[in-house]
Structure formats: structure tokens, C-alpha cells
Length: 188
Length: 190
Figure 1: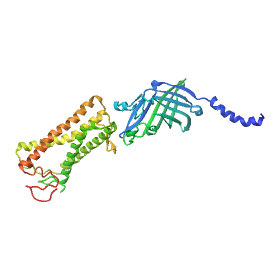
Figure 2 (figure 1 turned 45 degrees about the vertical axis):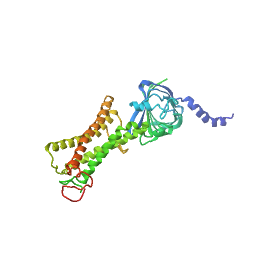
Figure 3 (figure 1 turned 180 degrees about the vertical axis):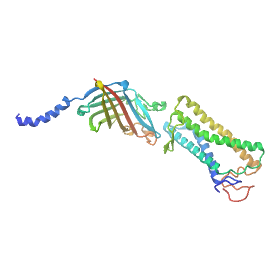
Figure 4 (figure 1 turned 90 degrees about the vertical axis):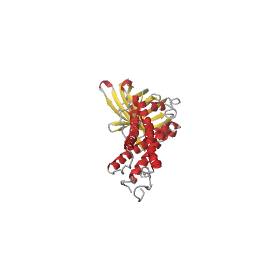
């Protein structure tokens, strides 16, 4: 290999090594300080819900987005919204169909800076349907290597067939559902 | 004639009387039949309609009372004093029940924590805090008020029919849409 050829290849080699050299931090989620919640609307009024059971593998560094990754698994039987009728209906076949699809899964590997925040371009698999979902990430390092992360995004429930059939009437149950997660993170 | 005169109720008062009567009776029967809904979503839709009709009754009652405040009712027709007083009491109680039925439904809806939407147009606030301990009580109050309304209504309708059939006076005719008076001044119907 001649020197000029190596000189031309050097930037390429550098780019290939970059993700390895600058790896984002792997975090574990402090579950007792973290929440995974959502806001939907029923008859024109918003209501809040949250999931009690979920796990998230978070690798993130706003300075090294190329190596960042979210991998979140949510137990679809664990939703509660403060109303017994609604909570009874949510795991049912018309909504999450939790017997057949006990887990929802979100994976993001592509991150783009947007001002002080970062947009995660990921994919949510819910009720067996995979659909792109963008989440806005606000990340704040805390003293001692821990970090706080707030994530929000809006999905359309009918993209995933949640509340189909007679429940598809969006004048009663709104199509837009906002997801909000607050994560307390500690480095692994 | 839109306004009342000394002998008969005007068209506006008749409109309020009969519209509220039909809406509150229909909505009461509708409310009692809610459990016939075949699916949970049908019940949700029926409930939403029931609540919207109830709010309509409440709004009409407010307008009716305003109209009445600025529009003197016709003279009372001759009757024994106890009957005049009974009629006045029944009328006041009916007004109170027409207010109490939608308000108790609103209370029931509030303690249950349900949204309140008027014909999918806009939402109204809760009038009480969510309280699961009160859901059965408020439901019973709302339902029993309707049975009480039917009892008082039986007295109201019975008295009107008694005047019409046995006394052959104008008590019913002067509230009946488009009816002509038999004993009062002749003239146009209202």
C-alpha cells in the first residue's frame, strides 16, 4: 500500500473507528424514581395513565449520538389510569390485547440534535404492529455521574390498532396519545 | 302571541313548558333503559346523549325562569283556596325537581370522575370532587328524583285533567298549544 493511498483511506478508517472510540454511556434506570406515563383523551377530557412494569436499556450521550440506543420493553398488562372500568378494558382484546401481545417494545438507534434537545427516531411495536415513533429527549447530567432524562412523543393509537372496531370512534376516544417518560439514570 | 296575557300563557312559555316536559320525561325513561345497551361503547354513547339532553333541560330551565321573571303569568282561575295553594306548591316543587334532576346527574358524573361533554361540542367542569364512596349514593339520588318527579307530575297532570274534564274551565286550554279558550276573551290562539 502506497503512502498516498493510506492518506486517502485515513479519514475513512477514522470514521469507522469513531463509534467504538466514543461510546455513549450505558445507564441503568432507577425504577423507583422513574415513570412511564401517557395522556389520552376521552369525551374531550384528558386522562393520565402509567405503566407499572417496564424495563429500559439506555445508552446515551448527547455528544456521541451515533453510539446511543434506547431499548424499552413495556408490560401491557400493567397500565392504570385511575378508573376501574377503563383499567379493566385496557388489557382486553379491543385495546392492548395483552394475552396475545403481553409486551410493547420501543427501539431507537437514530438520534438527531434539535436545539437543546435530541429527537430519537425509533420504532414502537405495540399490539403486534411496528410503526415509527419519534421521541423528544431532554437530558441533564447530575452530580456523581447520574442523569435525568425526560422523553415525550405523540403517537396515534389507531396506527397500532389500539381501540379498534367500535372503539375507533375518535370523537369519543382521541386518536392522539402522548407518551411521557421520566428516567433517573445511573451509569452501569 | 309570544308573551303571556292575563288569560293565557304565551307561545314562549308554552314552548318552555312542553319542551322541558318532553325532554325530561324522555330522558328519564332513556336513563332507566341504559342497561339495554348491547356494548360498552354503545352505553358510552347513550350516556353522552343522556347527559347532553339533561344539560339542555337545565339550560332551558334557566331561560324559562328568566322569561317568567320578566313576564307575569296569567291570573289564577277561581278555585277553593286549598287547591290554589296545592297548585302553587306543586308548581314550585316541579321547578325544583326539573333543576335537581340534571344537577344530581352532574353531581353523580362528577363524583364518578367522568368527563361531561355537551353534544361533543365543549366540556363542562365537575361540580364535585371525584369520590368513589359517593358513586352509589349519587346514582340513587339521581334515579329516585325521577321517581319523585313522576309522582308529583301525576298530581300536576291529574289536576289539569280534573279542571278540563270535570270543571270544564280553561286551566289546561290556556297552556295547550294552539288551543282556543272557552270562557276567556275570544281571540287568536297562541
